[in-house]
Amino acid sequence: MNKTILITGATAGFGKAFAIKFAKNGYNIIITGRRKERLDELEKELRTYGKIKVLALHFDVRNKDEVEKVIGNLPDKWKSIDILINNAGLAVGLEHLQNGNTDDWDRMIDTNVKGLLYVTRAVAPLMIARNKGHIFNLGSIAGKETYENGNVYCASKSAVDVLSRSMRIDMLKNNIRVTLIAPGMAETEFALVRFKGDDQKAKNVYTGIDALTADDIADAVYYCATLPARVCINELVITPTQQASVNHSFRRADG
Image 1 (cartoon, one colour):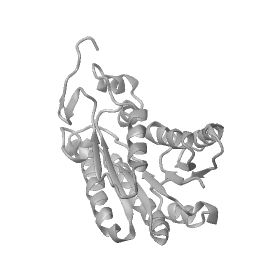
Image 2 (tube, rainbow, N blue to C red):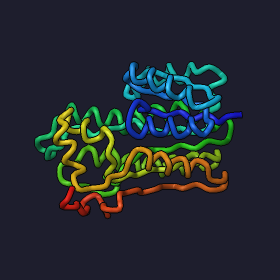
Image 3 (cartoon, rainbow, N blue to C red):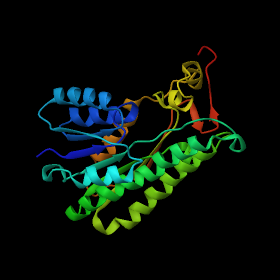
Image 4 (cartoon, one colour):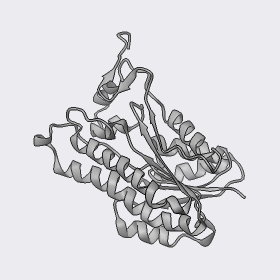
């Protein structure tokens, strides 16, 4: 029987790469996202990867009532979730704290922290009832260090780091594995969202850097997920070779 994986924020970037990676390897896939058109397109694509089942759930992780309603009403055949990837997250804005946009702060905290909590609260009991499961939380190296103008984004990803360790302890007796994935510079829609659609600013972030790709992170998550049941990778920090820390990178002059 195919295993089942639920991926939040599956319509782009890491989330889409996770869905494709696991679909190609025979997993039944539950994808979630806010953008209905993209969700529908991905659902069609995933169905081409073999004899798997795909369920697309259209909701916003920031809306607690929606999360509870949608996951609480999953058909019985979809409740045996083996893997949860809390991928939905974003950075918005890049200002000093004293000049920060409070709407941006709310969006980051509501998605990166509260959304992760709402989804985990809904899915974890389904895993605990079966005494098995694996939860992946997408953090960032920005949750381990901070940088100028990173303030609230760094704080939100630091919360993901702490919550991952807390989940590991709280669900230890229930045989639930928890893995924090903390990527460094990865060229996805991340920068474009942060700069609110400013394509040039987004491109400048990666100038001179052979950045990580979404597929790189998907490969790492798949590796962790397919280790023997006795093995749990508690956290994985992944950076480009040209990046040693959040504040230390080497940019090639030839771009």
